[in-house]
Length: 444
Image (tube, rainbow, N blue to C red; front, side, top):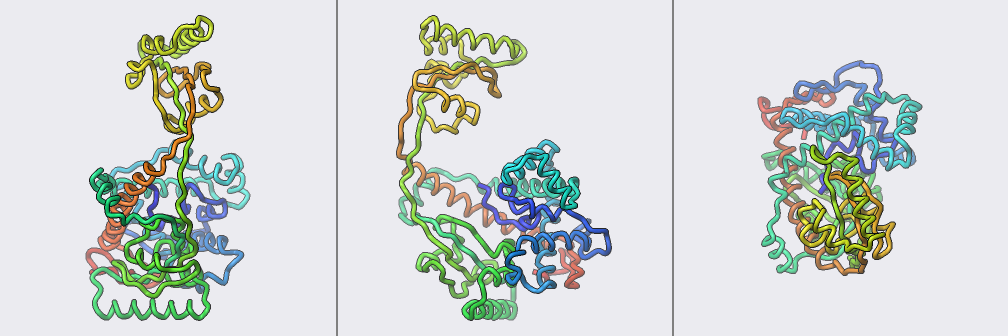
């Protein structure tokens, strides 16, 4: 799924797209004073300065889009507080991240920057960043991701009947839209005065945008959403993944246009339609193959398994014995052995990168050399390829994703609001204290 919008974007944005510049959050200045307390953790001025500097670096070429420094500090601190609260909640519920998990995440960061892990470390050191602090920020992000998965797990199940109903309703809109938004928050249980004040603020922001203020700059300066410092960018989404609060509104907008102020469950929104694009017919290459798997374990050593599949391959290639008959006799894959090792038709990535690499290197009818998989030693014979129209299948999977994401987004948003309202937070920049023993969160 991986479509949650979380305040942790200030730490690493997302592990799939993080840049070296964003890693500057991991650098630390000497400790000077406490700027906030989130439950049992303190946030230091050095933490805040590092995070603010990270944002400044991201907007180095467009500094005019950033709000005044004091406003930026408040926004960044709010995000750091929410990150700390989520990390603490993850740890208290038994979620753990191993050193190996962090290593893999750093590998992905390096790959997305098209450098090696060694070059990543060197770049961090060159910029004066502490590698241990950087690894901690990676670990925190992984903890938050796993917390999200756990929280929404109960909402991730989608029945076939739910998919059928959505498809039958003909309400599944085709195409995608690229959106930005601004959220003027409302606290839980907002009274009439608070609602009117938020509405007045949203109207004023809309007036400034109509007067020529850049939308990205307005989002950074005024939005209370977790993605504010990314200019409120929601990225590309299918129409049916657009939040219901302004879904119908977007359908009638033109690229570049900005909506009127719209009331939603969490506050007042202003939406900009950046661009739209249509769905296209989806055609994929499918492969037909069969294989023989010899598992390794207590009874079969790695060397013995390799020798067995090598011998089977020799009997097929040199002895002209039937591959299917040998697979039925020797293969230890319970799902395909009765079919003579036949895997049927499948997309290239279905069985992982190792099998994919073997298939793409073969011609129809050829048998691979023995290769090792997680289960043991394998040989595979490519039988053919075909082009398949998977548009209908993709549409059905898209409908399933739409339902799942709606459930998950709502569930996690409610969870974050609950975490914030239940947690003790002393924000010394704004002079506010919130938590279960202090009434509603006045800093929202």
